[in-house]
Length: 123
Image 1: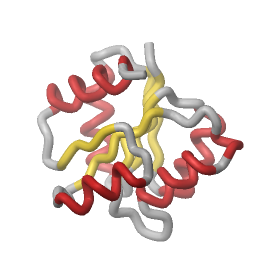
Image 2: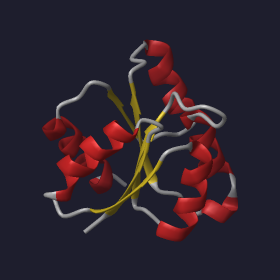
Image 3: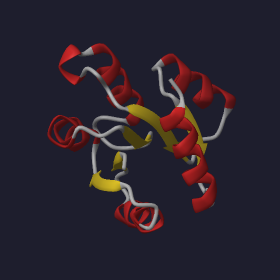
Image 4: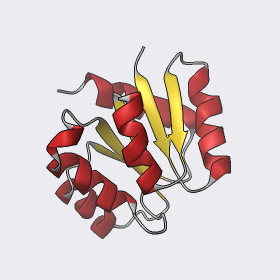
């Protein structure tokens, strides 16, 4: 089963997502900051990352850009942006940093699972 890294500075959101995904059989890990995520990616080697945008110090857009530009993270995981900011600008910015998909908070667990499955299957 696929490995997923959940990156969000809100521990409750990370736990909610882990609870929802655990029963789907995914191998899960989490990080509470962008800096921690970059470290865990090298160790955990996830297939997909659920990445919050609004985090202190190193936001999700910066993490995404680093992953796509720095060869030490190659091949980088597929990235689904998770954010409470659901404007057209945020969706465009997600595309510019080469995120694979976008999910607005709040979301239903079944919708997130469906988005994960579609993203993992996409080339």
